[in-house]
Length: 472
Ligand code: ADP
Image (tube, rainbow, N blue to C red; front, top):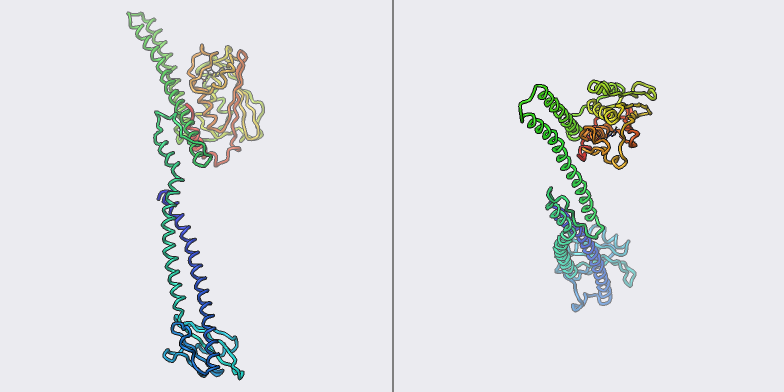
């Protein structure tokens, strides 16, 4: 059932219940009023008849207005009948103890079906107590009551019909902006993602919804644009070495060459292939850290062991690099060294930072300092290299960004983007400080095992899904 129908139905049901309650109350009150009024008429009739009977010892004259099925009976104290006005009618059967009750309370009512009766006590001139019982059928009262019932019922039905129609129109009007929003949203696709919903000047919930939707479109558009730029950057980075390789092969094949020339050409090609493999590996890691959330495997890892491992991996490849690892302080307990990590990813991140420090420093040297604080471990990775210009610092973690000051050194601009992603996956933080010509320092803080509640270990994967909206 759609909202429009539901709102209309609710509205009709609400009004129907209120009107029904109102009608029943009116009907009930009117019925009470009719009964009271008829009682009074019966009482008057009883007393008038008694007075006539006393004065003239005979029945009421026929010209006095009579009620339907009217009957007046006069009883003495013992319940003997002294007078009955309408002998043609069967006498109104008195409930047991009625006479006594009338004598005590002065008046008493009773009814049999539609016939209502009142008993009134009266003292005659001799001081004898009499009980006069007047009974009749309130034909006009009941017919008015029936008419009122019909009016209330048909009035109720009419009101329901009016409420239904007006409720539908009202719901339609209230929900029209929603239909408009839906129609507008349906026109937005990847080709016109820059389009926004009309918000108008209203300050209601639907305007708020449209604004929220527009904000979401803005975020999506940004992600979409950066995704596109990521793909074009990646293609460019892959095409460049391929073009270089093709050029080298074509030049080499132009004429017969000596063995040494072929070897030199193949060496050049090998360098390009290695560079491409590094780039592809970086892209794969980035994809792993950003998208495939379920494959990551978090385990307790000792941070010091991870650092030594990263150091030895780099030195194996680049023995000329110098990586110093210094412990500023030692943790009180061994558990403070342990963090919950996806080992291979965190190793990649640390290697990236260490390798960059050496790569972008003339002395090819980097220092890693480790500082333990309660619940977190801080890593300070610093070098005395070329540094990064202030204007480039805000972009340093963007994929494919390369600082103008280091263009002479080979690289693809993937490492830092990947590193930041990995640190975020581990609920850590990374900041950079740098000064051109003086060097660069990266500071990382990571929560230790104690600071990572058991439930957070499992929540890492859902966090990662959140981070998967990474701006490539
Ligand atoms: P790559 O090193 O492959 O270019 P990264 O993402 O690791 O890619 O680094 C991005 C850019 O940040 C580098 O090109 C370089 O300009 C700059 N950079 C990173 N680390 C340092 C550093 N320690 N010193 C100076 N510049 C750095």
